Each structure stands twice: as C-alpha cells, then as structure tokens.
Length: 184
Length: 412
Image (cartoon, rainbow over all chains, first blue to last red; front, side):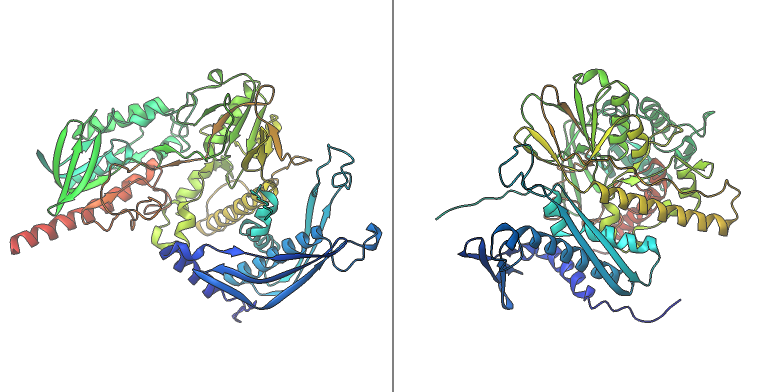
C-alpha cells in the first residue's frame, strides 16, 4: 500500500468547488466558446481563439492562439495546416485525456504515462458528392489508449469509461447538435 | 376544519409503514389517499409486472410476507392485496378517495386542503413516492407514432403490430422490450446508462447478497456523491428466476442502439455512445461482484463458486438512426423513468428545478417530511423493504419535533 501523494497536476478541489458554486448560482455555469476563422487562400484558413464567456463575465485566454487549417498536398492544396477533420481528432483525444487525468486525480490514481491514438474512417465519396448514400463525416472513430498508472487494469478501464461519460467532445461527436449558420 | 396531529399523504407501502410507526408512538394521524390503498399498484402497472424483490423481502413494520413461495416475486395485484391486508391488520386510519389539493404552512403547523374538506395538522409526511409521473424527454415525435409510458402500457396486444422503439434499458425497459419481442415484433432498445444485474449470483438471489452484505443498508450520509447515488437508474432486473440483461435481449433478436438523442427528417437518431454505457455497466457489475465476493469470504458464506459474466455484446455495426412511421418504428415506449409529483405541496422546500430539498427525508420546514425517494435515507429507501427503517427513524424525528413544539407552547 503506497502512501505517496497522487499528483497528476489537476486541481480537483477547484473543479469540485466550481460544481458546488454552480449549485448556488447556476447562471455562472453558462459558457460560450468562440473562434474567428479567416480565409487566407485556397483551402487555407486561419483560426484565432482568444475570448470566451463564463463565470458570469467576458473572459480571455492568456494569449491569442492561432491555428492554420488547410488540406494536404495530395489534395492539390498547400498543406499550411492540418485538415478540419483532424482538428476533431485533436479535440476528442485532448478532451478524453484531460478527463482521464482529472478522474485519476479524484480517484487517487497516479498516472505515469497516457497516450491516445485517435483514428477516424471516412469515405471521400461523401464530401465529393459522388455517392448520396455515403455521409460526409466519419463512418467511425476509434481511440486506443496506452496507460501506465498505479492501478489495476479494471480501474484504468473505469477511468477511461468515466472520462467518456463526462467528455464534452465525446458527447458532441456521439449526439446530434443543432447548428445554425448565418450570413451577414 | 378537522384536526389531527399528523397527515400522511399516500396509502402505499411508505405511507402505511409510517402510519404503523406513528400508531406505535401514539401519534394521532390520518392517511389521505386519492384512490384506494395501493392505488398505483392497481392502476399504473402492466399485466405481467412482478416485484423485482423476492417475496421474503416483502417486509413492513410489524408485517411480512407469509405465503408459501418466499423466493417468488409478487405480481401487481398481489402487492395491492398484501398492502390492503397490511392496512387492515394495522387498522390504519386511511381515508380513501380523498385527494390532497394543497398543503401550506400555517401557525406553526399545516393546513391540508382536499377534495373532501380541509384538515389542520402539526405535521405532514408526503409518502406519494418517487414514481408518480413518467419522465418523458421532449423530442419532436411525428404525429401518427403511438407513444406509451410504463404507467399506461398494459401488454403487447395494445400496441400497433409494427416495429417498436423502447427507450430506456432499466427494469421497465428491458422487461417490456422482452415481451414485445416475444410477441413477434421488431424491437429496438435505446440504451443509456443502466445498472446491469444478474438475477442470481453464486446460487442466491442478487438481492439476498445485497441485503445480507449490508449494501442495501448503506446510509445517505455515508455516500461521498449522494447526487449521483440518488440519480442512478433502477436495477436491470425482472421478477422471475432469470437474468434479463442486454445479452439475453440480443439473443432474442432485440436490436440495441444508443440513447434516443433526437428526431431528424423522420428518422430517430441514436447516440454513438452505446459501447461506453455498456462498458460502464459491465465494470460497475464487476465491482459489485468483487464487493460481494470479499464479503462472502469474510462472512464465511457457503455458496457456489464465484463467477464473472461475459461483457455486453455490441452489434457488429452501430445503428445511428431508424425511420419513424409505417414500416419502421410505429410506436414508442418511454421507459425513461419517473419523477415524484409534489405539486400540491405549497411550502418553500423545492430547489430551482422543482425537486424537493431534504436531509434524509427531513425538510427545512419543521414537521414536514418526505418518504420513498431514491436513497432517501439508505440504498433500499425505494424498496418496500426500505420503508420500515426509514419510517421508524422519521417517526422518531417527528415525535421529537412535536415534543419541542409542545414544550414551546407551554413555555409561552
């Protein structure tokens, strides 16, 4: 039995404190996430992410983050950045992995290494409009985790399952979401 | 206006257990019941439903099942008869066909309005239970689709002969999906979070293990996350000597899909999270069996060897949508759970979402108590077998409240 203090670098007390604060003031839990995307040239765009709304007021990241979005040379593009669908994989892997760290911290499990391989299958007939029976998006997403931690295999599996249960991006990918696109 | 010391609302197992405990403490009271004793058991149960708990667990204060089938499971009409016998044997002061229309605090007590006159009382026990109103999600179901809840579902013959979508894979959902499938229908079962359970484990009813090991007695104030414990779905069980889990349903040809997430272009949409909700349930079951095995070792229980169950088998290809309407899903059974209806309680004891706030059944309004809600005081609070301990403790608290109030009146 180890008595060392588990530290995955997650401030669980702050997260649980937020949950309690939300119970008293539910409106401060209403967040809005934002990104500004500007077309550069061809399939190349650049996305800025800086502000968001939450805890009842305007908020800001400590700096403006920039992301280039493009398509690879094989698509006759310039490959200034990864494709939009690859950002989805980045988001899913990032969300689930953050969740694993937080759940592990709360359950007193020390993580040593966590690695996710995220793969999504897609049939290009869809986005090219070549086959109406093929959807545009992924036909499936697979995430494979390799985790080294002070826990039984079942406890590690339970971490991963709980992380999915509480993941925003997992929810966004597995459930329909209303999307409204306006032009002004 | 009539007077009494305590008004108990509802003559189901909780209200009758409380009545028995109040009588034992010489508290003058009345039990107000909108219909007959055990009303919901007579009017809101499907034909084949049986209790999920074995008969030997049908225990109430001063009363227990005494038939010749202790390991069987009572049907709904048998439960109603048993509760009627209990009420008679207890000489419970039940006023039937008396619907409470409002209860409000007044002059250190409460005024109870009913459709048959008003009562003034010092204390109130709301024992109308956790399953008064079916909780149905707000989804835009196209016209022409027949929808029912487990409270108004009776048997397969009363649904259209086409495909059926059963939403929810807890006790009601798996049982109704099973009998609809056996009636020859195409059945799709939308599965969210669920609590997988074998009917028997190591040769004994799973509820025997949970009862004997003390798991059903775990108290509300010992739970690290009570919100989560109070929101767990019901155990995936059927009142019969067989296990009815998702693997058993798949074998009979029930199609498993994810949570019913939306309707788009006449198609029902299902979440892609089926693998995870099944994994969560498999892991949770494994932890329960680990707990039981460890207790069995410590307690030296003579039982069959321990075992583990095959993981939930998933369909080879995920189904993410299905057509609603003729030739597809023609009816929907909402087995999505129930919620209490305390809308007649005009006392400020509710949170912003209308849920009653209480500490083990004790509300912040002195003399006002609630019973029969999930994990009210212990894990078994919603079981018939859970009413005895809850009623005894709340009756003690209630008597303490009356004593304090009486002392205060004397002093002033």
